[in-house]
Length: 470
Image 1 (cartoon, rainbow, N blue to C red):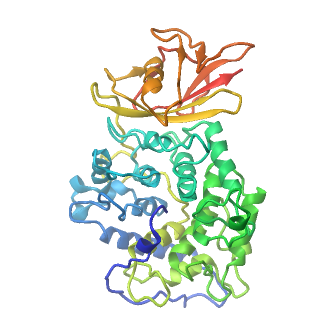
Image 2: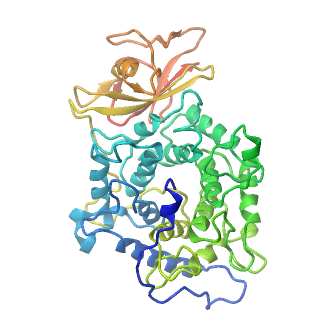
Image 3: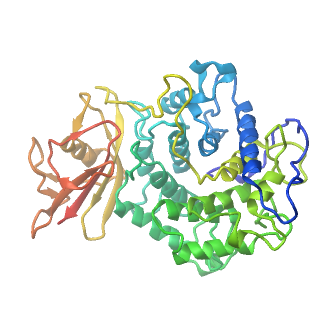
C-alpha cells in the first residue's frame, strides 16, 4: 500500500508465543486446508486487535496501522466491533471517522496516497468515504490530484503508485448499494495508464515506466504487480485479459519451489507475498491451485501461514525473524482471508451498530468538496474537486457548476455554463452546446445518465458526472 519501504520493515517488539506455525497435520505436498486458513484468520484477527490503542485508535496524523481495517473486513470482522476492553464508545470505526473529519488530517502537506489510503480503509470500516462528515469527502480529495497535463494519472506521474491506488480506491470503494460511483470514462483513463506502465516481463513497479523503454525492460516488483493487477480487475478488466494473464505468469515465474514464497526485489518476505496474493484474490485467481501450486506442493498461502506465530497470530516479515511485524501481519491476514486491497464492511455484531455510517446532509455554512467529471464526448475528460459552502441541507447542480468555475482543483474543469443562473435545462458547458441529437446529461453516484438541469438536487457526498452525448 502507499507507504515508504523503510516503514514496511518495522517490526513490533512483541514476543512470539509458540514459534512459527508448522504444517504437520497434513500429508506431504498438501496445501493449506480450510481449517488451517480459518485458524490463521482467527488468530490473525486477535493479533490485529492487540494493536489497538487504549483510546480505540489505529491511526494517527501520519502513517500507522489503519490498513488493519481492510484485513479485518476481509476476515469477516466489522471494524465497529473492535473496541478496547469492550468499550464500544471507543470502537475503531468511530475513532477513525473522527480523525478523518479533522481539518489537520492527514497533514499540512498531503499527497494523493493519503486520501487513497483513507478511502480504502474508510470503506472497509463501513464509513462512506464520500460522506465522512459535513466537510470531508475523500473521493473529492482524490479527484483533486488529477493530472490535467497527463490525463489518467493521479498525483505526480513519476509516482505511479498514486495512480494505481487511485484505481483501487475509486473502483474498490463502491457506493453503499455496491455500485461503481465513478463514471466509466474515468475508469477507462486509469486502466489505459496502468496498462501503459506494465513492464515487458509482465510486472509493474512503483515508478512510472510509460514511454521509457529502459524502464519497461527493468524487472517488475511483486508488490506493485499485485496492486496493479488488482487495480485493473476492480476496474472491470477480466482475469482472462492478456495483461492480467501476463501479470499472473510473472508472479508464477517468481514462485519458490519448496516454500511457495515469491522471490521479490526485496528478498523473500511476507509483505510481498501478501500483496501478490491480494492481487490474485482481487482478480478471482485461486492462489492455492493450478499455476500457484508448486511441484513440491507449496503455495503462496502456505508461505504466509508458515510465517505466522500461533496462537499469538502475528506474522513475521522474514522467515528468520523472531518477532511479528504489524505491517506484515496486516498484509498477510488480508491475503490469507481472500481479500484484495479493500473489502465491503461485514454486518456488525455490536447491538444497534449499523453496517454503514455516513453524513446525511450538508451543514449550511460548512465548507465542503464534491467530486466532478466533465466528459465532452470527444475524448477530453476533465476531473476535479469542487469547493463550495452550501447554504442549506442540499444544493443544486447549477450551484456546483458555478462553484467549479472559480473553485475547482485542478482548475479549468468548468469554464462556463448555459444558462448561467436560475434553473432550467443545461444547454452548454465549456462552450459545447446541445445539438445534433446530443445533449448534456448527468449521473450521480453511478446512476443512469439523464437530462441535466440546473435545479437538480445534489446531496452531500454525491459524485457527479456530466457527459455530452446521445
